[in-house]
Image 1 (cartoon, rainbow, N blue to C red):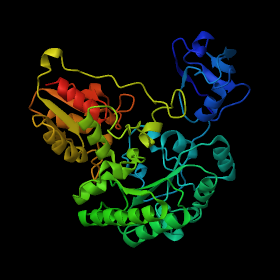
Image 2 (image 1 turned 180 degrees about the vertical axis):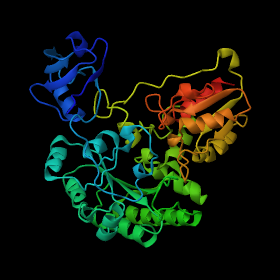
Image 3 (image 1 turned 90 degrees about the horizontal axis):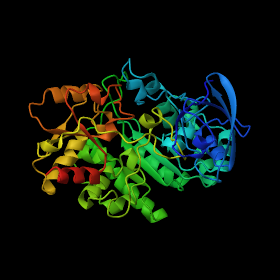
Image 4 (image 1 turned 30 degrees about the vertical axis):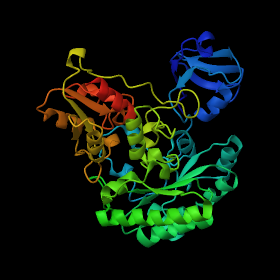
Amino acid sequence: MPLPQVVAVAEHSPAERFGVWPGDELRSMNGQVPRDVIEYQLLADEPIVELEVVRGGVELEVTVVKQAGEPLGLEISAAIFDRVRTCDNHCEFCFIYQLPKGMRRNLYVKDDDYRLSFLYGNFTTLTRFTEVDLERVVDQRLSPLYVSIHATDPDVRSAMLRNRRGAISLRWLRCLLDNGIEVHGQVVVCPGVNDAAVLHGTLAGVLDRFPELVTVAVVPLGVSRYSKEPTMRAHTSTEARATVETVDEWQQRFRCALGRRVVWASDEYYLLAGLPFPEPGEYEGFPQHENGVGMVRAFEQAFEAGVLEPADGVGVPARTGFFAWVEGAPAEGYRAPRTSSVSLAGRSPRAARDAPITILTGGYGSLVLRPLLDRHGFGEVRVLAVANEFFGGNIAVAGLITGADLSRALAEEPQAGRYLLPDVCLSKGRFIDGSSLGDLPRPVEVVATDGASLRRLLEVGR
């Protein structure tokens, strides 16, 4: 098993003062071998940290003395130091099965690891969860966790996961809730499989068996052109509307029984159905923002206020999920930023600040941005929806725009000017297809994916 490596050492940090170098491989801390960045952080919080490192093939001992809880100052190369627990389900709607060949190897790793659920917000099915895992989660208070429910009917769930343990693994959800662990759930809805009456049954099961769940997001499946599952298809507009109506109905029931809404439909459903989004206050703090629930309303609030936090005080959280964890571990703390800020590439010179502005986004983003810009007097700003030909199917979110599709769209652009790209498309400067900003045929400006940052840039550009 390869040792975790020190990627960077913070300037003036305790680690730097006592002689830890970038490139050092971490063998042990205070005599213990940490299995992941969680255990690493617990050990790093101690006032005296005795490190065994390997430097250039030579084993060294470094003792760091600092204040208890003071950051050690190291950025580590991975979140999991032992082996990522891979998923043994074979869900027909799994997006990893829908990736084309030839992409980066780590994108094909199918995890079902509760540690990545805690660290990055990945959803776990709990089919590989054990008593030992439960003991650790409870002892170390690894909360919140994120659980894929999909259906509470045992037969439906096991069929969807293509794993007989799927019928019984939600017992671990009950154990987590019994021990006070905060859990957020997800239902990926597949038309003709777990929608309609099955979805009603699932939400009834949540109220009956798992009322302590903090939230449940109802999201549509994504279908790429590489899917080999003939029964998997995108929702129709009518099906999307029916799903929203089901969620609305159960929100009222949850509010009557528990005093909170619990369940929300993702923004994509409202766009597919052509329905207006709920008011911001109805999202109760946007707890599933990163799962596409309330993202539009949070963006609009920040854009309208022109500040980094929406008017109700709810900030836009850091991106989480699969595309995040495969690219790097948090440097300090369980949920610290994964990477440094993306540098702006090819920024327009000051003399060109008055050049026409074009915002590059996905198909869904364009449906939101165009009316928002018009409403606030930015009608001169163009919005270019970049078709996702790389994945095809119903994939239209900005976060899955590839460099290849951007290059095609930019090459076809006759208009000179400034092109703005949301940073959600990038992780460590790379698109999901492995290309980088330098591969694009013309310069773009990378903008933080929040309404306030966009508003400020547009106003400065006037």
